[in-house]
Amino acid sequence: MVPDSGIDAARIVLSLSMLGYAVYSDLKNREIHDLLWIVFGCISAILILFTPDMPRLLVNIGISLIIAPVVILIWRLGFFGGADAFGLIVLASLAPEFSTSNGVITPFTTLTNSAILSVIPILLNISRNIVAMARHENIFQGFESETRRNKIFALFIGYRAKNPKFSFSIEKRNGSDKKLDFTLKNADSAEFCVSHDTWVTPGIPYMIYIASGFVVQLAYGDIIFNFLKTLH
Image (tube, rainbow, N blue to C red; front, side):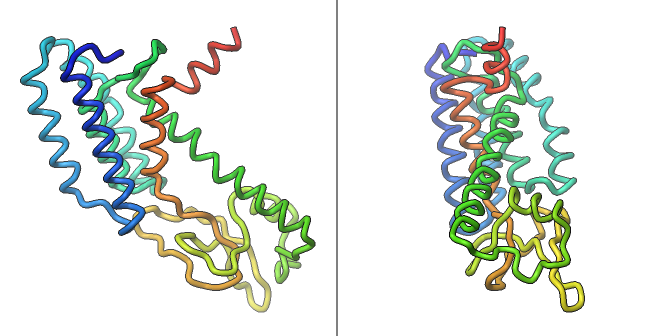
């Protein structure tokens, strides 16, 4: 839905402000206070009273909030944090299905856009590892007994860091040998790696992808839908 009133524009500005502060707080403190979602959730409810076409807005918000049980399930499975789930729920009520493009927007557009953007670190990992191997660095030193399949997988999801920052370890000791560990790390409880010269996977806050996914939604729409549309 293309914004067609001052209230719609205000909702977009408020959404960007909320996500911007959330990203800043997540990067600085590695946590986002729940008060942020409470405040902007209340603002969203108040704005309903000033909306010219209230029935239409309530329908759009109701449809957009279909995303709530989905993101709560994703959170409980540990794929991203509670703050990410709450942020998407508040966003669904604050700016339901808004875009400046004319493409189809669904309640899941921001979520799917963010999922696609989260692939970027994989590309960076591959590039970093290719450069390291081109420099003849033995990035798998100590992993002589590890399988080729696991080593190839590691090239995609991580890299060997001398001094890791905001990353999760993906290696473990197996007697005198090292092994790669691809156990899923819970976004709310996993601790950052503090060891030196170890294989890690980046711990980039998912809120960055959510904020970026929303910006892409506003400017371009749904990445998947628009891509499929170009195939016809």
